[in-house]
Length: 310
Figure 1 (cartoon, rainbow, N blue to C red):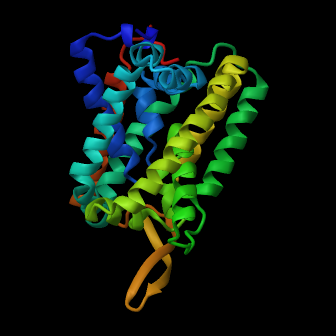
Figure 2 (cartoon, one colour; figure 1 turned 180 degrees about the vertical axis):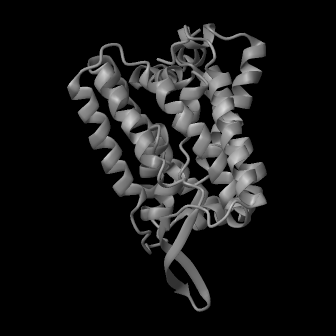
């Protein structure tokens, strides 16, 4: 059995399913990163290494008919529990998530803003030895991320090759804390298209998108794993900057500036700015309360000072 799978008991696999459920919900919300949630649950390193275990040695054993040996080589129990939880949450709640994003954006953003804001010191404390270079890393990656999340969504093709590319790019960003795979789909003009495919059970579009996800994750995770081993503190500093830069996207209160008519009578918001609430209303109080809930939840998840995420 793979070393990662050996770390968990049956009861913990049920918990992994629940944690994967939360990661799936986070990934479905534009501006929120499932990678950040994986960090908060302390799953990030195991998640990266479990994906990386699906290598050429696994494929070779599989083609040789050594099924049990191949399965023992990979962390399929761990990864399967997390992925099943994530897929289950998306399939069951894609309509609810779409409704919340459409009709309750302030409340949704407020909760995740608090959760992600409190995660910054949690992740930054993993850095073992601070220096000026790491501070510069944080500033540069935060600035670049802010530019990305402030970009204007574009209209793009619905062709299957482009859907495949969207899968590759979305999963690569999902792995990184601070970058939302859902928001990357928004930038590529394919978020609604994929959500509709899920709701309509469009197997052609979903299959193509899933293939892109598989190819993307198997390729990108190896680069990320190598960076952690060779440049641990530098990589963590960049990830911290990514999270800081992403906060501007999920600030709860915004003002719409520009819309794009994608179809007759159908407008899509393409430009907005962050603002402060006009007055202290019940909605504002509720949003602040949800923000505090997010902060408290993060602190509870990481209440042990000895807990190392990586």
